Length: 236
Image (cartoon, rainbow, N blue to C red; front, side, top):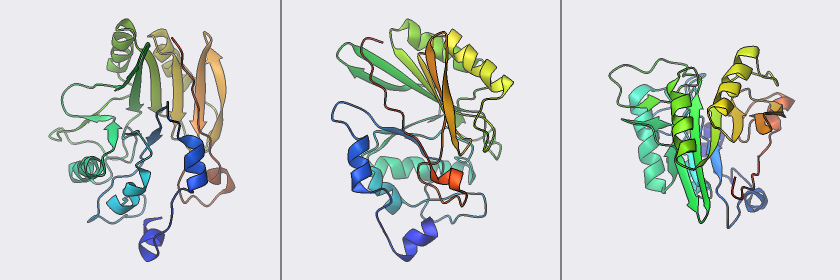
């Protein structure tokens, strides 16, 4: 996509689709599964976008950086991504330096906490790196969910997990999602499998398992379909 864009810049998302996604009362949250670094070129399965491309997404309120590609170019790539987001004026969540804080939305009686997390990264984050990532396999995730539930927030978990091209959660994945809900989560949304999955409920809590690829250059037909979840929340 970057090569095509730099060869001839174009509108990455049509205005018609943007109009359908954006609501005056709502927030748009998306997964940014690529470092954004103008001086680093993509290398095989290591991704890299540019700040010019990112500037087309001012209609997104918050990008999740909690995914397996955010560390493709180490701390340098993560720092460049954070800097690019700040320059464009976009919020982000997922990477943190000291203590993790969810993306918080407070509108009248509604208090919503969006927790972004990932099963891990493709390349291990060095112990000296200043950035950390909330991991789906660590108990601290459940502590964070419970903390914000107790503070009166409706908790949404946006999790980057699952198996590539598999539309259904594995037994281990179902256990993790169950633990999220048991800890106080009110909704779970999953990305990463790169194909559209399904929806189910546990304790009447909705789980949207895999939204597919919203904007990616995958060649297969299943990677050219995706879903957006629209949530209407009133007093939980």
